[in-house]
Figure 1 (cartoon, rainbow, N blue to C red):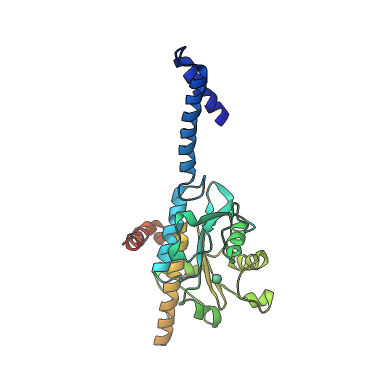
Figure 2: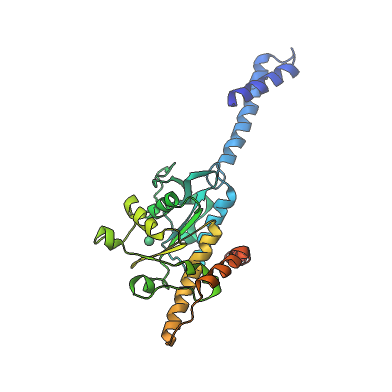
Length: 284
Ligand SMILES: [Zn+2]
């Protein structure tokens, strides 16, 4: 390809520059022009993001990470990833970095075993296997959020089941199982630091949108970054509201599964409204 372009340029000069200028100079000019064009191509390859990946997906990871940080769903920890739409066997996530600091230049590409495709010495998240194993198990999932959101933790360690309190958290009507790492792996550092732990977590998630992690946090998934972020945010809001309702005492009138399904369909249809609001707020 590059050789062909070089020949085309050389022929261009051969055709138009006659005896007053030797072919040697003509070819030199072609080489110089080719070098300039190559430089421009190289500059394009170095623009933020991952080469060959849709810039919109990269942008959504960056914006989504900042939204989650600004609204307290994540702090210095937690991460967001997206499956590469052009290569379903790869996913994209930041190098090991606090979500609020993520830029397009920090996004890396991984295979479904959690290996970085082009590591270049960058440090990666220990818990990337949460993402890789869910992408393996759930072909339709295009984005994954892992957070340690404070509202959720009580529901990961108590006997109270997290349930949908209001329409924005309707997706919880499908259930939010609690994964206990101790069950399969004994006493650990609590981190999903290898494929076996990620696979166990993905197995309990099943076909649900959310799984809680005992003494750790939760994972939300979705068909896009925006949906996964929406679910991470409203899982935390719902958990806080449920704790408040429990504190009030008496029986709680949760959404029924039927109400949950109907309300979730509406939420997914109007999701860009809240996404655009969040995006504007983090831009201030
Ligand atoms: Zn974690």
